[in-house]
Image (tube, rainbow, N blue to C red; front, side):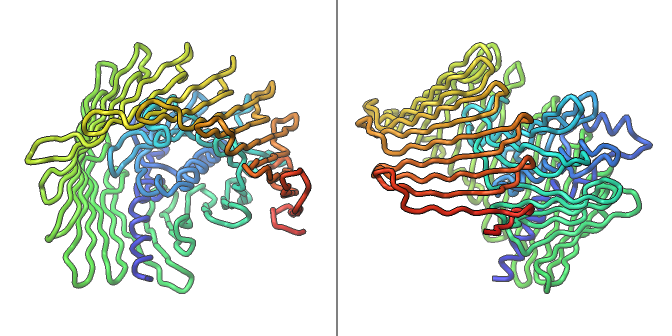
Length: 545
């Protein structure tokens, strides 16, 4: 079991080498400022924890970016490169995360919003995977989550509260500072339990990172002088275990080789880049005592715009190999119109996944076709197919989405329709999802309604699910209250059940987003209280009553 956990840690480590550990490879040398700015704005770079020691606002945004990615196991395993965009003040305003290990396509977007004083107020994450049909190639995806930041009297960032799909969660982040004002530690809690943290030195360099997937695993980074290139990195499984060193080799400021020696297993990764610092070859070898080496190879081909045209990945050892290929075609507007994923076993093509896209004059996707093929004697045979069409309003926001599933004979087996309604400020106020059977008979309907105040704060949500007979099966209601500074001070969650009972959770927050009190009440079908309990919290959100 311990060996398995170590293996997991190694995989995590290597997936993050290009993300978190390579954070310090960004070229920010004071003797090459102009080149650094050019790289920062035009080249897809390694994800960074780098900070500007003289600008805490930049640091906060960047520090949160790696935390946001770490929230999701999927991204921790697959996100490799990020393109960062900055405004005229040098503040990070947008990050585009690219799926490294499979398609190298956009998978996650984060926007950073600042007030007139240049303080970070909000970061919004858009998840391309969740609304894949619409969002994978257009920055028009539904909001997945966002963080609202609060500041202390001293002006330093104090905490952040995470919202998922506009619902406040039990997730928050606390900060500790060095005497020079830079962040010393960032601790990530969920429901009062520590689940992730980073520690930084006074120069703003990440020196310690815990593993969200394994609470016992920790990464340690060291540096030489003022350099932001990681000199040594070590992996520690638990307090009683040994440190496993990760030896890094750099070429032109980018990690070109890394080696982890776990005693009974050695993992080596070699990376080659082209002249634009895009990776063209990544090879990872896992050598276990008494076993044949296992190798994972990735190869990339780019067009003149540095867009991936072809990607291939090979996995396996001397006895067995799997291979994946991705080919991409772009239209005249540099939008993806066709891409195909091919799956091989021992060099034999066994599956093809094809995606086709059509766009309107505003580059909105108006139709996409997703087809799965199996291969029979070298011939593609359709197994499943999904066809989706979209319409948009004058602001390029999705109005309708209709998707049908077709079987291998081309017959519709089921379909669904989604409609969206927005207010004059672009906030979604109603979302309706209808599911149909093969005869287009309505089977279920879901309605989500939202209400906003004059400051565009979400103040109420309702969710209702109907079955085929239009009988309500479940209902949910969410209410929010804010102060004059738009801090959420109260969140009320009510769940209604088919037997007439309901549960109400009422939470009170301070201006920093910390919970002060939470009351949970259960009612019977006649509205009588069956159970109620109130939890009170101290300033550190520990339950005191």
